[in-house]
Length: 246
Length: 309
Ligand SMILES: Nc1ncnc2c1ncn2[C@@H]1O[C@H](COP(=O)(O)OP(=O)(O)OP(=O)(O)O)[C@@H](O)[C@H]1O
Ligand SMILES: [Mg+2]
Image (tube, rainbow over all chains, first blue to last red; front, side):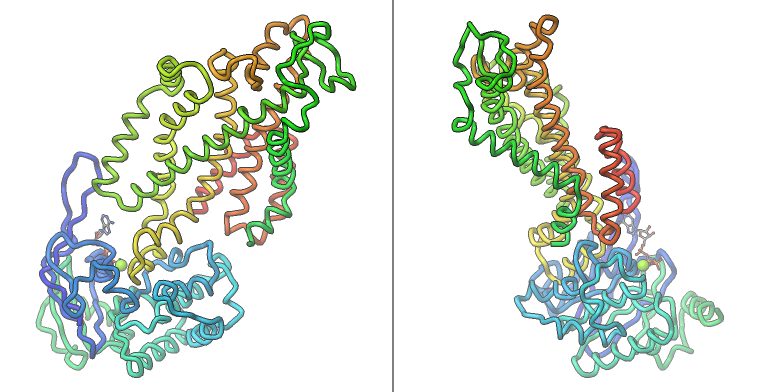
């Protein structure tokens, strides 16, 4: 279980002497359990990706703690092999100097596990690519293909938690369904849990049973998929209405 | 591997690498292959034209120019390369560490660099030589001590571009520790910048050292060094102008080779140009040959690489 306790995060405003800080996350409390998938929905700029980076241990919160099964996520060894991610911006998700195979293999090297080309190929087929992509370099992939390689890489270690920051939004619908089904299958078979960040309520409800509504760095409301229609908070009702009517 | 293949197919890198390697080998073998002792004088033969005995003629003391040129490779080229290697090593280490870890470490390191950078290099080298005495060693030590901050700052800026890329976030998120991330991602990504910097700075350091030797501050006569060979030739520039040619051409050839080789290597490391490497390298080679202007070629390439990233 990942526990997020009273997490606050500031960013410095630009300018050498401004000294002003901008509060991006404000006292966030959230538990991600290992039985259900969670989605975070919120406006652009509300701090969703920032929360994601904190959960991944890439950045430190200014106050509060984030723990995985009681251990601080800031320690690399705690995260190893258990946590993985697909990021919002796929253009830089793979190192341009290394081939697809090496990229997918990378998390394995750290865990001193072997990973053959066949296994990598299998993984690529699952995300709708094939073995011919193994030797390619990132600049030879389209945006959607790069995103799918990133997804394959994120799943390669069989992690417990995967952060999906707009991971499927850039793919076309048929591939989206294929990948969402893959996610669901893995979550049943291998006990993988997802933290999804998206603007697409359909995808959210397809994959996740718990919805977290986020606004300007705060958790506004948590709700079960079944009860989406009876949101209590004014803001979250408006947000979901606007998403659905589009 | 792809990179080596590209280097092999690029005439620019092949030719310049051959020139550089040949010079290094000649420099190492100088004691064996040089026809004369570089300090042996023969006043009867001064200013001799090229002959079988003296292939490049002799200087104002009748010393063999070819032997002096060959013996001059060691201080003029090889020691300079080692110095630049040290400087780049320190600069890369400090630059990447402070870019990657940021925070107070970055602040401290960069303030140290700022302080050292505020001294004018040439004047500080003079001061150093003043304290430690004339000669090559004090000068090389001074260059190492004074130049690394410059590299550290440049390399830090290069590394900062990559620090916030998602592949680095991914490696960190999946539990890779700092040094491993640096070795796997940050260093390889900055390597083209480092190599370009190194190659152009071998040339500029050769010129700097030759300049100081020319002024009589570096290697002391009668030991041969290209800069002081040039300086001795200067005294007779009107009566024997050809005396300038051997050291002058040698310095120019080495500097140009290093610059062009650096360009070729960084092109080869640019993953994005893998598929169109050969056409581009021909264009670059032609440009290099026609204009002979290293600076112009590099300006264009830098701009292109900035817009790529
Ligand atoms: N490294 C940073 N330095 C300074 N400010 C930042 C940084 N990263 C994010 N911010 C600011 O924090 C706020 C939240 O950004 P974040 O990327 O978390 O938004 P988001 O909810 O993911 O939005 P989107 O849906 O558009 O992806 C924004 O106002 C952004 O300007
Ligand atoms: Mg975001």
